[in-house]
Each structure stands twice: as structure tokens, then as C-alpha cells.
Amino acid sequence: MKIFSIVGARPQFIKLAPLSKLLSQFHEEIIVHTGQHYDYQMSERIFKDLGIRSPDIHLEIGHSNATVQITEMMLKLEEAMIEQKPDLIIVFGDTNSTIAGALIAAKLCIPIVHIEAGLRSYNRNMPEEVNRIVTDHVSRFLFAPTKTASDILKNEGLEEFTFLTGDIMVDTIRNNSKIALEKSNIISDLSLTENHYNVLTLHRNYNVDHPEILSHVLDEIGQLDEITIFPVHPRTKKKITDEYSVSKNIQMIEPLGYLDFITLESFAKRIITDSGGIQKEAYILKKPCITLRTETEWVETVEEKWNLLINPGKQTFFEEIASFKVPENQANIFGENVTIKMVEIINEI
Ligand code: UD1
Ligand code: UDP
Image (cartoon, rainbow, N blue to C red):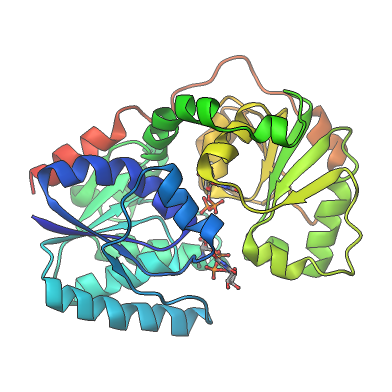
């Protein structure tokens, strides 16, 4: 088959990496990059770290408001699909690149595989929530990462299209953990000691687009005893102006490559985040995770008591972070050998 893998944002490259390697052994896989993320550290660096070949088609859309961005993506994706006539489209996660790819493929009657299907936060203020619901309902093959996601799809009447495959990020991290430990010097470069620092990431609109929330979060994290390493997402960087007096306890750095970032996570005392992928990685790496959100799609990590949800608008919460302890054991939530399962299903199409 001729297959389009459509990606555009950092977490999608990370999900694409193991799939692309195996898929291209059986099929003509065309990697389409929409250009949604474009900084070297957010895009090319991740491709390099994970050994993903350069995109076959780069749409170079870049940033604008969501409506213009999705529309431009759709127009260029339509052109590419009409010209190349793919038999199957694969979309990942819940970004604007995901919904643009899914809508155009649906209009052109090309079957769609949705990787990371069935996630719901039930918070319609998240642009991602709308992207997911629409993508799930126009896709033909729904690859659910967890039992919860698979149950949600069944409850929405999508049972016949649902495959509980597990989460592909498990394979990315397993395939790269050893390579990261060999290649990354991030711990010595930042003069860090194992278990004596926190990792922080923030990029959700409801956290970073409200100055009062963002400054409150930074004030709280700055009161923790340990130093906090904060690779700053470009969205967040645009919001942290000179008016912010960020605590000396927080070390702001550029976004890291994947190998450096998973090394940083691996030796941290705890991980504080609002990212979806990082909540999963914290669990897989057996690190306490504090999620600065009122809800999560990864409910199992909370049920297993490895992930603590904190409302970032809460008056004070640094002591809650400091006292959060995780149990000794954890269940396998995200599965194993996920890529092989996915490719076997695709090979049967
Ligand atoms: C997007 C996804 C989000 C995902 C996140 C992963 C949507 C609606 N959101 O959010 O689901 O969790 O990616 O990181 O698709 N920017 C740069 N350089 C870059 C990338 C972005 O400067 O390489 C800037 C953009 O110009 C924009 C801001 O960051 O001002 C936000 O970028 P955008 O892609 O719209 O959304 P994210 O917050 O990155
Ligand atoms: N990540 C990275 N460098 C960083 C921060 C994160 O490579 O500086 C990786 C991280 O390992 C994870 C993914 O980016 O695999 C998470 O992406 P992000 O937080 O941007 O998006 P989300 O998962 O919330 O959609």
C-alpha cells in the first residue's frame, strides 16, 4: 500500500519513529510534515535523535491562528493526496495537524488510522479535545493506547473500529533508553546530581496563556528545595516576558532533543508537567509525576497513584508537590510491543 504518515508537532515525531521504521519494510510510506512545529529543537533535532528519515513532503505551514492554520494544512494536504493517491492515511494524537489530515482524508474517502484514539479530557476548552473527537469519528481504524480509551470508543458506538494496541510511546522510549544513556551528556552539562532536581514542562493554553496562572506556577515551583530544570516550550517562551522574576531555583533552558530529555527525566527526583506524553514517560520511567491540570486523559496513572493532579490555580501547592510519594509497584498500563501489533493490523487491511 501507499501510506501517508501525517505529522507536524513534536510528540507526533516521537510516535512516528518506531512505526515508520517497521511500516516502511512492508509498504511505501510517505512522511508528510505539515510544518506546525518548525524550530530546529522542536522538529529536525527530534527527527535526528530518533533516526527518522527526512519528511518526503514538507508543507511548511508554520504558525497562524488555528482556523487559518488548519485551513492551509487542509488545502495543501488535499493537493498532496490527490496527486499521490495514498491507499491509507495515518494520523497521530490530537493536534491541528491531526484534524486537518483526518478531515481531508475523510472527504476524499481514504481510510484513516488514528493512533492514540479514544482519549478524552471532557474539557472542551482544550483545542485538542475537539480535534480528538472529530478525528476518532471520521477514522476507520482506531488504535487505542489504554483500556480506558478503548472503553470510551466503545461507549461512543465505535467498537467495530477499535483496536486496543497499547501506546506506541512505550516502544519509542524502550528503543532509545540505552542509546540515550550512552549518547547524552545532559546531566554533566547541567552539573546535576541524580534525584536532586525536578523537571518542569508547561505548554497548555490554560496554564501559559494566563499571566496570573503562569507566574503563580513559577512562584510555587521556585519554592521547592531542589533546583528545577525547565526546558521552555516556544509557546511558553513567548509568554515569559522580562516582567517575570523567575526564581533562581528554576533553570530555564531551550527545549531539549529527545535523547537528552529522556535522560533528564530518568535521573530526576520528580517530574512536573502539563504535557500528555511526559505523564506517560514519567510512569514508564517510574518517576513521581505531578500534573498541573484539573483533569487528565491518562487516568490510570492517577488511579495507580503515580500521578498527582494539582489545579494550578490553587492558592499554594508546592508543599503538596514536595510531600507526594509513589507506591512501590505499578501495573502495566501502556502495553508492550505496540508497533508490531499496529503494523500487523495495517498489513491485514
Ligand atoms: C501543539 C498542539 C498540542 C501539543 C503541542 C506539543 C494544537 C492545537 N496543539 O501545541 O496539542 O500538545 O503542540 O508540543 O495543535 N512555536 C514556535 N516554534 C515551534 C513551534 C511553535 O515558535 O517550533 C510557537 C508558535 O508560533 C505559536 C506557539 O508556539 O506561537 C504555539 O504553537 P502551536 O503549534 O500552535 O501549539 P502548541 O502550543 O505547540
Ligand atoms: N520532549 C523533548 N524535549 C523537551 C521536552 C519534551 O524531546 O524539551 C519530548 C518528551 O520526551 C515527550 C514529548 O516531547 O516524548 C512530549 O511532547 P509535548 O510535551 O510537546 O506534547 P504533548 O505530549 O503534551 O502533546
